[in-house]
Length: 297
Image (cartoon, rainbow, N blue to C red; front, side, top):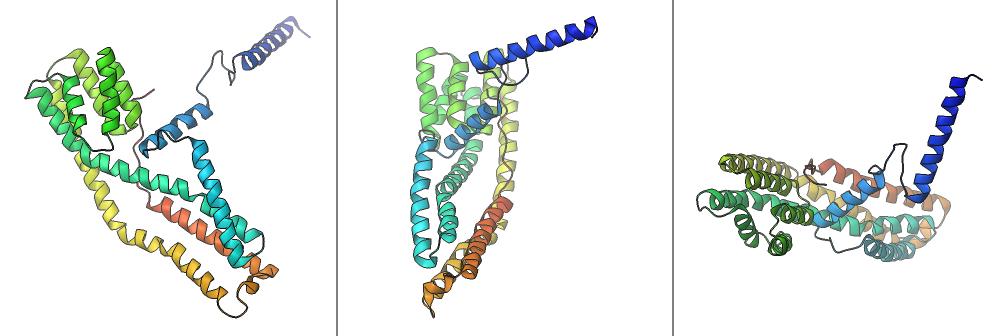
């Protein structure tokens, strides 16, 4: 073995020992010289944003899991009462356990739509107060937020408390962005921060352009949602029709005993999986593109 090979092996062994020590002592992951954002950290941040956008920022994931567990037991019990066996109740229980997350997703979509409706008006009012009326940018922002939609007021109240305590506009905007977890709020906050720190009259033009962009985005989304109204109504029959057919089947002939043999159990499992798959596929197909947050840590 040459000297160069020996040196290379020694360096690799030393670097391996460094990686092992930092993983055990500091919890670092990866092969870099220092810590880097892990996928789990990114997932936690996205999950937190998702809960905040749904108005569930104070709800722990464990609480959602507990509710899902209760619904799993209820759904499995009902399925057992109708179909018997073991596989159909298991599939039905898993499907029922997804209802809290589906409800949270729907709540999140409704809150975000109401926020999209409000932001153009709020930005326009903010532009007028900060330019025509001559109020300071922090005062204009907090005043507009206090009169905003009910979904946004707690975030502005938290930002107002931070402003009263620190009078640090950057920290105030950081609190506001964290509480709202909204791409439009991020863009507005960054625009106002630059205007507050740099000064100048450019804030009027930038906010006017932002209003125009938000109005166009809102109009496009409302048009798409209107075109999807019929499909969303029809999607409800994915659950209603199979459930009705199952209840009718119980009341005819041998009823529940008809599902007792292996073929009946397999047919029920396939049917439940198709219902759940069609429901999830339809939700994904009808989902409109979402903006990603970019101006946040």
